[in-house]
Image (cartoon, rainbow, N blue to C red; front, side, top):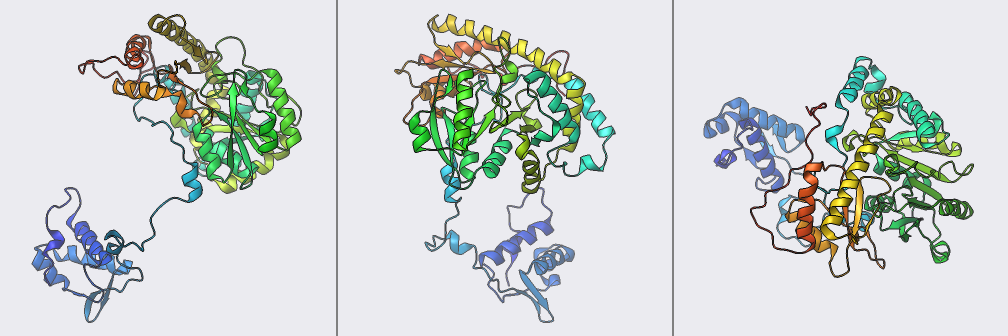
Length: 503
């Protein structure tokens, strides 16, 4: 039998020949190139034919026998009769093959979310300033966590998360956010998305209706859709989520998702009367409010509005928080604050539905909070981002005129620049991308029949030296002017702070 093609070029540069021979024999068996019952040459014969060591052939034969692709007996080594048809049949246009695809629920839940760049581009929303991150303090907390680590930190996290982190977080929320909570009400999650997924699965049943802000956070729609919930869009006005009687009667909710402290992406702040009214209607309707306290830590002027959680005793509110914006996204730690009535059951269900880890990081974060580093960092960044937003506002007004409409400046890391209807935000974003900018189209967060036309401009990752050049390029993108090909790409992200070097 002629088998020289088994080691014919091209050969992978880094793969040993025994692995190459194994993979090509396996592919030949699975594709049907070597038919069932085919007698293969003896190991010595094949080794001599291919001019390789016999052990190389023995390795391939023995591995394939162990996998059931080959059969070895006194008569020799033969190709096994596999239960599944050869892979080649589905690749040759066989119309009877079932196409590979996601479930219908998953396909319906996926949203055309704006592309996420691996590089941090200027004006990309939701990106903190990595250059002023307290590397030394965080590194010291990590080193202490590793030094004191035991088997508990190397295994799965305890129900609800590391007890030390839950206790530290309860103290922080009570002091800084005014939430009278204890550690037993807190469940640590792998970020906001994981928290929303848990709420969708544990607080709603398949087919229930969830209200989503329009425009709103697209990833939340994905979590709800994958859980089998029906998403109903509710418009947002100058005071936040604005449901009408038609929404309450025609689409009674089981879950209501809101970002009241700094609505994403418009930046609107929900008024106190509307917060109280929403709690009362949700209580009457048997609905849960999921309060994502997005960007409340970076309030520009005055204290943040009171959270819905705790406004009324035993209110049907679940509070969601994250460290992705206040520290860094890669930490992947967030949390839920739950009413006492469901906290213990929620924590137990969470531990059974998922297996939380990051024990070292959780213990380090607890230390970071307890030593006051977290509060000091928030205070520093609050001033830092307020100064940067003021500079961006001034630059935008100088470039586009004093009448340019800006919103969302009360808190957070982004502004919305509204555009006249004659200028489509999606067209501007396409031109801005060619100029190295990471702006987002406000319309991409909106669902029909509502329409919004504007630009979401993140300023968290832009230092003063980048801001002027970024606005200059934004002017070119908005005004659809021709720009020279020789314009160099903008730097991806600000430089590291001098006293906190990136390593």
